[in-house]
Amino acid sequence: MSDREVINDHLWLVDKTPLPPHIPQVPELGATTAPLLSASYYIGARCLPYNDDYMLCKKEAQGTGEIDCLKEGRRVTRCAISVFEDINKHCLDQFRLHWKCLEQQNHQFSGCRPAEKLLSKCVFDNLKLEKHIPDTPKGQVPVHLKENPIIRPNAQDFASVNALKKAQNEGTI
Image 1 (cartoon, one colour):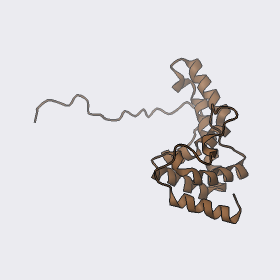
Image 2 (cartoon, helix red, strand yellow):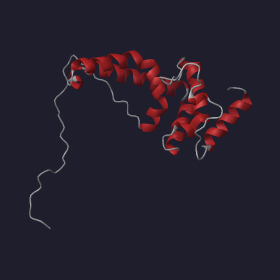
Image 3 (spheres, rainbow, N blue to C red):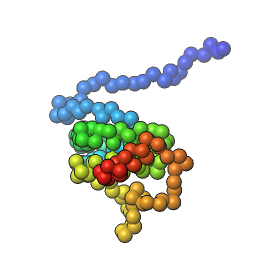
Image 4 (cartoon, rainbow, N blue to C red):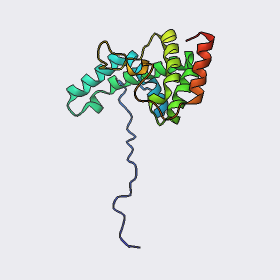
């Protein structure tokens, strides 16, 4: 063992300076990767204007956007929180089924298409938000709506498949 002193001890540097009073406080989203991924297209659909404002602000700030664009960033966060609240209020079971499937399928959408169909229908019926994949060529069926996709999962999520079959038998989808 060496007698050398530690030069960098990897301590976290935390700035405890409060934010300026003109910037409103916003709670953190507090979601892990799978729920964020599951709701990402619906967040994109509802929060597009706020996201565009934030990205434009960062571009115009030329390197100081983290400081100069706090207000716009907080708007994006508030919008995302509203999407999560609405999905949890109206589609909690379908949402939970989908993000748990994503957890089991290594965050790959292809293995969770049955759960995604249930979630998409519920979100559209209750929130009027649709999943839209940017840059999908016109006239081509988006990958999440294909009946026989080329890329298929190695294993299906049984809970998702059973829930979809149950919904089809009941005529709700």
